[in-house]
Length: 412
Ligand code: UDP
Image (cartoon, rainbow, N blue to C red):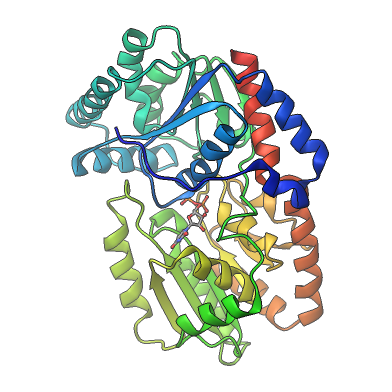
């Protein structure tokens, strides 16, 4: 286990975006928790939505006076192969679960649990996603008093049975489970549950408003992308569920109607995702012949911000999606999104108001929607304004924090 670095945050920075009522509610919830110690555990410090959320939630809870730590599991490549198979299978398709895979999963969780023995005890531990669930074999002994909350961020609408049975041995032992949508609870063995929608942090480098000079600098850095010609973008880990090949197909369909259209496919490799590099290479190869397709990796947050802000349309052509923070990130920046009707995407895209929803297997339909938007400046501007308000009302961090602290306060 190691404690990743994260930036400082202060709750007062949110007053302009969420108003004082919600901040007062947060302060009063936090006041009741100032004697409590809370620990979050996940499996990567970088890449993907969970790390993104924890980088904001952990420092903000500390700013509110709740003693909160964040530990990331130390693990081998073999463990991450197993947990990526588990992630894929729980979202719908994966290889058979072998005894050897189960043994690897348990052994790495045991090693991490041993490292926790020297740590102070916590009143409440939040375990994020399935990777650290195996710690439960040991937490009863190391922290017998701690309340355990499982925070599931993935889409469990169609899980592979043997994997669900395996994780259910663990999830049945937690005190409370939090899902991103009620449809994900399904047959998972869990006691009490809550539904909390994720959120984006509006004051980070990725989501804050940028001055013209920063925008110009980042635009230059993204050369040879042109911001004069039409541009669509998808930003996602290189992961089969994000369907970068479907995005390419949608772009090709839209290019039939829109001259000089460009596509930016931006991605990163999360620390706990061994499939990323291989998929990146396949996507780069498929895009190589078209100079208008730009496959980019390792963009800084300010670069992601500028692309989400300056693209004409953002695409999110996922086949499964726990929530899809990237959708709200783009909508907040007034960029309409064409996305698949899966997971958390339909919560964020109001069809015909903030963007368009398409069936997950309909790449051509996605291309047609992109083309419709690109040809209609007034509609894009209207959708963009609607989108910003929709995210302000529903998907900003203080709302999620109020709900999370509500669960913690109820459990302690
Ligand atoms: N992200 C990024 N750079 C990339 C790819 C993704 O900064 O090259 C960020 C993205 O902006 C978002 C998060 O990673 O904040 C992805 O979260 P999301 O919920 O969309 O998907 P997940 O990766 O958790 O499935």
